[in-house]
Image (cartoon, rainbow, N blue to C red):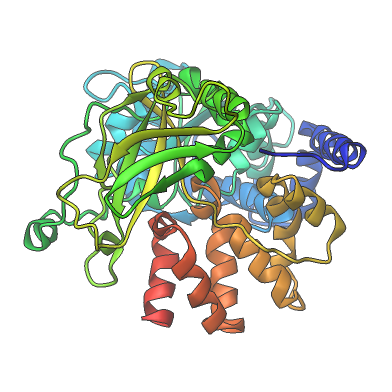
Length: 460
């Protein structure tokens, strides 16, 4: 159970970061953009809707975003995928044709996921669209001015800016077009990460005969409207701390505080699914992982939260919670190394969140703010506080490895450029320490293919 020993300190920290987030308004984001890009002569060229260079528009727009990401979170630049450009161009051209701002197209490519599939990607990416005037009458209007106008609506809200600038994105596609009356410029920006890229090798899977659940197992990908509550509660990560399995393959949830366990589980959604992952699936030779699914290994049938609560086999007077929730599938040898992820479901089998084992432990750091955040298990805020230090060549080894651990704690952060960059630096600073740490982590962190490459080249 999470206990706050210093409630006033915790309140101060919350107020501090609340003020910090509030201060990063649309105006302050634009101030950073101006500082980073206003002197670029290429971007100051006049934008002529009758004859313009899409490459300059793309470069200007992405440079603005990259500058913000680096300034705020220490992120490395987004990497362009030409085939993602194709998916984005398809939507930009549709918007220009209809002269309408929309993320929807026409069948059979109505939704972003369908367009991503057309160009060989998984559904795990997000699309953002924007429009701006193609000219300002007699006033000077540069590529730089246009990109500012395109970015304003994307950065205007407290929820919009974090979505666009999130360090979880590492790759992008960009498309632009102008309506037939030359009045408006439409763009589509697609942002993704390693999970957007299909790396599953079905032939290798047959050769190795590793058990992986077929199809989608009735599960659906994340839906923002359905999943909002379960994704914003940081305490839900503690459900995985309750998980253990015995030598016979029986899987349990246990806690020495039954009331706390019940409250936590009732916030988790409708049900959970157990994802049994063999570590061999992430081998260095031919990984057998299908990123087009919301799971990685063999999944259990959905286990209703009500059934888990009813399965508590402790006495009524006891404040101890202990419930059997499943068994390791027979297809997996009990002697094999495995991880078990917990998928939180809401609605009609929508996977809202993936919980992995905790990769953060025994961090000792001199930074007072980061240490206070770590003490209350606000790992994500601690990470974003420390990550700009990655650009400092004098960063201490303890801080560097703290960032590695903090970034490894959930999918949003271990798929980020922050995790990739910190692991790259750690491999140069102390490869033995890094290898030991990566061996202790959840195997899920190797969904970050760059980190898996570093591990295979450095540790194996």
